[in-house]
Image (cartoon, rainbow, N blue to C red; front, side, top):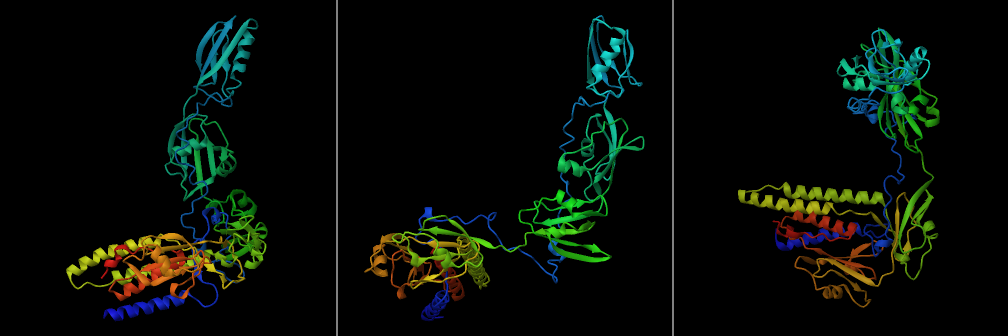
Length: 575
């Protein structure tokens, strides 16, 4: 292809690209802050404060989203699955709490003075007695540690009625071995002390098997009879835990897991919850689940009457339902808002954020915002919109993908050419990485020819009212990018000359003017205004016409959507 044909194709491409971004009417998509001082720029609302349109998902008839895949249980764990991680087995109580009941084998210290001189440690024998000299056996088995001193003092006082003082202390407790069995990970016989909690022994057995064991059906057996039952949901939710005193040979039995219901959606954390019966009221479930603010509906997927069942209900109506094992519940914030939140930045007076009706229009809000007409450029108002920024970013990414495909997919005829292409591929990838760091902000051009389009507002919009400016900016392929005082008599060439002229990589036929209202026009067709920015784009020297066209498109998109002329650097070496 001759050099003349290449540049003719190059110019045609620029003409098409420019036409696509310079629509004769309506809004154009541009970006950046314009001439807005940093202190006047707003920070977009964080995601936690933004009001987003609820995602309802697939629908069937009038019953809301019912596709089981929409719930996707995935790795949802049972409620309480992280309870047994070694935190109980490593903490051993002394056993000397006031409620502890004395057992055979315990050690009791008795000190007496006055009519009876005594300082000894007595073991509790198999009959539950300690033998005090000159007094005889004293029954202490079953007596609490808090009542032990009173019992011994009473027994000694029956013999020595006057002039005797007694002090009693439970010195040590007898260790016990308890069997842990049922649906636990490591059934076995584990050591502890009588005052240990059931959690200590379960943790020694590596906890409950979350796939088959119950957190709500745990029995403590002594001589084949249940002395206590444990529901760990009461402990997890309210800190309530039965505290029976363990004896040698007691058995802890974890029963099989009961029916489960799965809860997902707008909740603090998705879990599977165990039921103690085949059905339970929704009220009981809501005692366990922490809903996020604004939850309005619930979707139930399950089986009723031998067949599949789905219902999408308002929360008040959902509370009257009965849940059954296997049900899947998805809570959602699914209600239309009557108001939206928009922000204002730039030269104005008053608050930054405004709550307006969902059908509010731009001019209605602007009419309510006080400004200083000597400072604010009301003819250059623009709007930044998140959905537009998203489309601009997707368009940029698609162009970058096409650039990589156009160059990296080309074949090499020789080994030397292949080696050159490897080096050039690294240059392309470096350019792509730098381009991806630039973020379009989704600016809508709403002010043209002295008129403002009265567009409808959307949640999260940022309205920019720029300051009146006496400056003009010049950047891109310029020797000395800078800001200059605006002179209405000067033309584009005058400002370029005062900035030191063009660089060697500049394309003098590809110069753009970015307006304060976000509009971008070709310099040859535009009359300069205060606050404008002159953008000089680089020439694309690649001999590969396909690569050149895609690269030109990317540079133009970046200039329009970010007001940044990206340096092509060593890409000028591409073949």
